[in-house]
Amino acid sequence: MTILLKNAKIFDGRSLGGECEDILVKDGVIARRGSGLPEDGAEVYDLGGKLVCPGFIDLHVHFRDPGYEWREDTESGARAAAAGGYSTVVTMPNTEPAVDNPVTVEYLLARGKRAGGARVLPSGCVSKGRQGKQLAELGLMAETGAVLFTDDGSPVWDAKLLKTALLYSKDLDVRIMEHPEEPSLTAKAHVNEGVVSASSGLKGWPASAEVIDIQRGIALSRETDAPIHFTHVSTELGVDAVRQAKKEGLPVTCDVTPHHLSLDENCILVSRFSSTYKVNPPLRTRKDVKALWEAIADGTADAIVTDHAPYHMDEKDVPFQEAPCGIASIECSVAVVLDTWLKLGEPVALEHLLSLFTSGPAALLPRPWRALGAIKEGAAADITVLDLDAVKRVDVNEWKSKARLCPWDGEMLQGWPVMTLVEGNVRMNRLEDGE
Ligand code: DOR
Ligand code: ZN
Image (cartoon, rainbow, N blue to C red):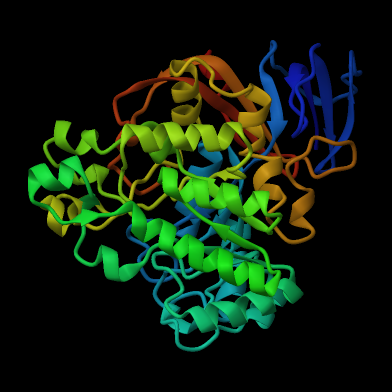
């Protein structure tokens, strides 16, 4: 199939073109970029100045397959991701059973291919069953197609095992993504340690729990010379630690989430302890939110990831203390970030913000996926079209995701993805909605 995207501003993964141009997509690849390209029987979409970007990449989603498919499965998750403007997602391995072997990786790749949504790339566990006792089958999983190793949901429990895994991961060219949390400090904690924990009596989750684990990982990266990536960094102390490590020249990277960039611990008080806002790591202070935006601005943050963590309504509809941690956001996360960015008065350049959805995360993936995240002739036609002027209400009832609880449900947000292409296939198209 041939598709012509006409009259678009083009963000190529690094910089934003000034004039409107066209993109010709043929046989799944970007065949040409230029002005006034001939239509030649192509399916034509006039984008009227909207923004063509490399397909957005989300390095951190929970699709609950295998084992908890009532929350989400590969098909609903992949379609939800495409609806949210993502062309590639990396699934987390905290499933049942956990993704700690090549057979489960293969299963997920096959399910993803059939789903007809975003491209699904699985991550594999660092340790068997995420128990921190024995290494998982890292080599075989990498060979089968695992693109990251992580025990996400929890940190890697054992420092020696993490060190060994870092050495293997360096050779395999598959990065370790650490969920930074020192568990002795977070046991039975529900909210950020500070005003909200003090005023509610709920046990607090201190910033130190995050930075201690980040410092452990940095020390091991320094010793092994292996890359380490810290996911959903939520505190000023956390991003400061990563900033220092980068200054030292260590191969240390991190990502931040839409919820930690837009919400703070006060949401819990204002909502009178709605479990919608319960998440790991917890929502932090306004000062931390500001620090995360500064981390984006100065290049400390390498990617924005959703940590889309769907639960069934019945599981979340319980008292705050009993509810599981997780925010489902993949179908509105891009709008949440763009809307917050606009409301804050555009604290970073648009190009830079967009790089955190595209070239930033792509650079953290192994070959051949590292090449995603760029609009280039000859590259896979993974494309996300953005309409920065579109204003739309979040409505969970329209979601492809099985999740129905979301902090932004009912809110009007500005800046939405309106089209998603995966290898030249249209996986979401809201151009006709008049947005
Ligand atoms: O809030 C979270 N939910 N954080 C995690 O690290 C795991 C996730 C989940 O699996 O529900
Ligand atoms: Zn996590």
